Length: 139
Image (cartoon, rainbow, N blue to C red; front, side):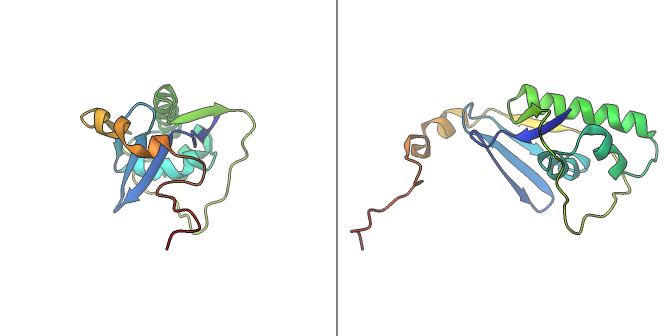
């Protein structure tokens, strides 16, 4: 199973090794650190759990255990509508990617404390041109 980013509803940013993901439909946001932050760009590039697991060198966990943990993690993000399962995606290469040595259990923190603020944000009520959008007459 491969996954793609739910582009219509999700915004994400890597800030110094921590990935922040915002679901603009639910107002929930998520924090990924450590191995989870390493897995994120691979997942949105269409890599499946086995390909992602192979990115990590075996250590305390065997490759099959890493793959199971990655599959669980991707399944959770899919259940939160952050990722969407697909059979059509082809994995994309990530230039400059090197194999990661350490793998830790993948943890994601979910926050709901700013739901009301994120859902009231006027960015939800804009046209395709985006926000803010000025008319061509404006100077």
